Length: 489
Ligand SMILES: [Zn+2]
Image (cartoon, rainbow, N blue to C red):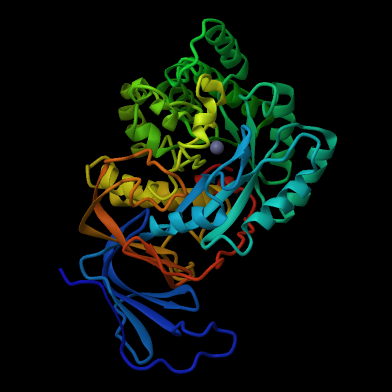
């Protein structure tokens, strides 16, 4: 197979006014295989001013930057709709900020992210959104949007919903867990669902029953069972299934669509399947960790299990086949990461002696695409079209970015990832771009690697190295949620 060659056919003319210097007017990606959520076909792609302008047989012309993609598979750039960069949480701040987090994303084939604004109690959500804009602007290297967590449903919060929707924040999250801090009750959730629906926004939930969790936690602490191995005990799948069921019922009552984040187990999947079979617009994401890792990791000696302390926790391995099937059959629409990274030394170890104090979360934003390509597509669990759908197209359609993002079509942003199926690698802390000292997926083999990543037509990563400019990411003002994308009226 030919090596990746990028060559200019002729010296590029001086750029037109308003165009950044150094970028050619046209980029032509030749002879690759294009995969969208619908189709796979060989074609050339012509890019002008960051957008795809032609797909098909395109002859090379003067002044074009030519990328030879023979033997490469071209997918829509990944969209990770669940990240937590620079998040103050559990007495510390997540280790990846918008710069390191989005560089890791870019190197791993992800060209857009949606991060969670988490306001403090009593804080205006408009103010919290401003703070997140400040964290991201000039630092993010891929395009970024925000969800807002609604940790209370006060009249002020509800009144501010249309204001943030007008700013392009068209999705919210409510926590049914973290009792005493982020958790809201059913009355508040109903109010949020109804208000969001009125303003064209989608509500997502962290579905775990916070009361059940804290009841178990109290007993574990009383029995001095405080090592990381008790973390999954404190987060039983029963509590996730219960919360999923209740959230779905509340959404039905409010006649609102619902999105369940980081679904991890059969108990919750069954509820989503039942709701969708009954015709209710319920959507859900799972994460690479629930598809590929399991709860035996908490049995590792000493404190090592802390590396995988996250909520929900890793589940019994028997949940993995149903989750892959849920993706394949369309009951689950997205794979996101819930990337919330903490260093093992200096952050995770805050919970030595008490697993309740271990900052929850893992690094994953840079691994998602590669893991799903190798362990999904290459292992025959997902077709290339399903891979495109769950990593890019569905997230774009659910969260108001389609068709600018999430697909390969004339008029769409040229956000692309080019995989070389013949290249191999291994996930390792030694090579990770995440700003942490371990990898949650250490040793996972990769069959096929992203050799080029383009964001709005610009090559930003090559062979896993970031080669784009600093802080080049743009804020994504997202459109309102649209059920018509999903065949509902
Ligand atoms: Zn999260």
